[in-house]
Image 1 (cartoon, rainbow, N blue to C red):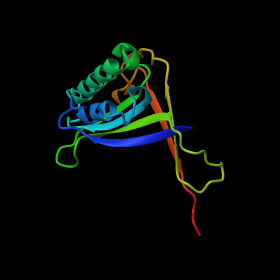
Image 2 (image 1 turned 120 degrees about the vertical axis):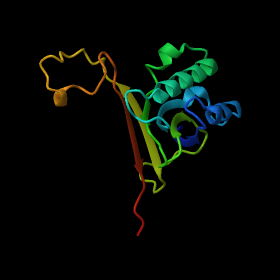
Image 3 (image 1 turned 180 degrees about the horizontal axis):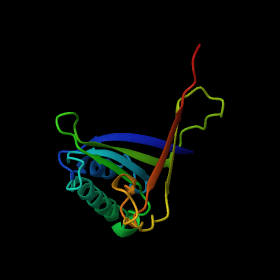
Image 4 (image 1 turned 90 degrees about the horizontal axis):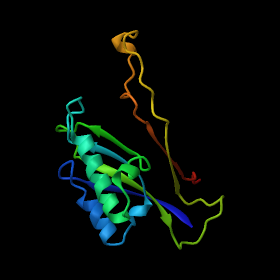
Length: 161
């Protein structure tokens, strides 16, 4: 049976993926089960914030090592959505969404047990836009030629009387 699991992992710095590495090394998850990542890094969230790229580069290198596949390929398959800026408000962390196989018994569609579904997709590259004809407030927020990652996470729990 396919199962979805979520792990909230801490990081000491944007390149610290030791908790993920430990989960893989201990056999808790397989690197091939990693479906998506959402995280908050310690950067300032501005254009000079290197922490999101640093985290993504380190993540893809780690998964590449475990999967024996190039990081340049994985970055187009595993959505990694990050927000920078935790100054004094929260601790840097990331949520790891995994899809794997389990030997757990299957549940019926009418089961009252909680469940989680995870889906991912990437858009086509966003084409370069002419900025000359746009006002600053109308300029696209997406970098030229970049993709948009999308994650769909839904949960279900029944209301109990």
